[in-house]
Length: 252
Image (cartoon, rainbow, N blue to C red; front, side, top):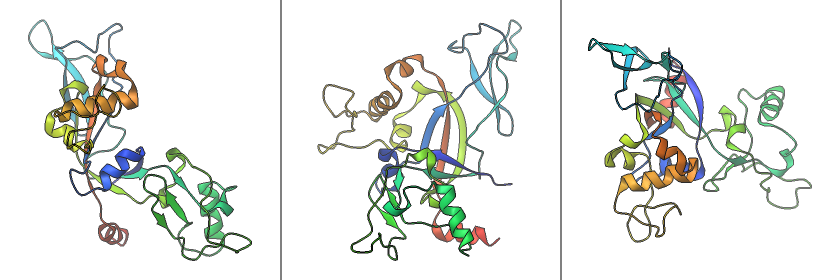
């Protein structure tokens, strides 16, 4: 059965998902494998990630007899499996008159007022795009509606999300194993000179290497120490779900 869950993205990655040229179509997130034996070094180069049953992964290495032996507890990807969906949670604002309400309180008021589904005027922080503002006025209704307080992505409810993704592949690998092709699919951006961005992490903002650009992007989010550790990561590939597909599925 299809599962739907939220996933957080910052403004640059939201824009990367939405753009037409080299759109973001995968994401890497840390995979918290737990060793079966105390003191096992998960940085050991002999470890290999295997899917031991549908959706469950383990890190293994060859034992003394040459057979593969599991070295960690089995772990399931928390973001879902093939066919599951992810709704993007991003920074947002509502109308200033609703600043005292949380997303769930807005939803409750809608249902209490007789609406079938919750709604509210939404302004997305990444690009300023607005939804459902046309019939909203700000008391005392002497001017256009005003955007209210900043709301962090973690507080975006499902009904306010504008981007729905479907998982098409899940795998596990080390962070530094990323290829040039995958780095581009991660949604890295370009500079005005046409080079890949280094996100303020290098002396010059531009590199011909997509992989080096992703390295810089990762450092800007997680700090340089994390890349050096070369952690195991979930590689979640996805495709956008169109409004027509979403509407069709809602009626079946």
